[in-house]
Image 1 (cartoon, rainbow, N blue to C red):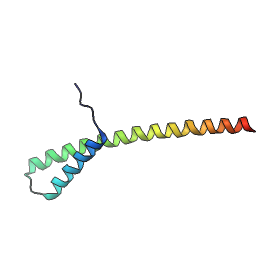
Image 2 (image 1 turned 45 degrees about the vertical axis):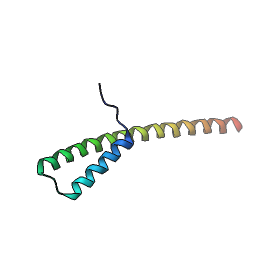
Image 3 (image 1 turned 90 degrees about the horizontal axis):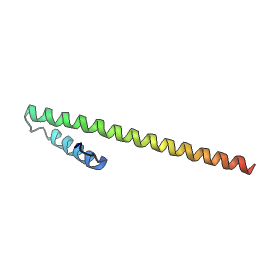
Image 4 (image 1 turned 135 degrees about the horizontal axis):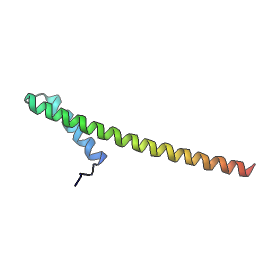
Length: 75
C-alpha cells in the first residue's frame, strides 16, 4: 500500500532535516541519507504545489469565463 503524503507533514519533516543537517554533528552516511530524504521530500512538495497551482489557474480561468459571459449577457 502506497503512503499518502501530506504537504504540511512533509514540510515539517523537511524543516527537521534541514535543522539536523545544519547542526553538522552527523556521520557522512547519516548526512547523505538525510540529504537524500530531503531531496525526495522537496520534489514531492514541488509537485504538490504545481498541481495546486494548476487547479487554481483553472478555477480562475473558469471564473473569468463566467464573468465574461455574464458581461456579454448584460450588454
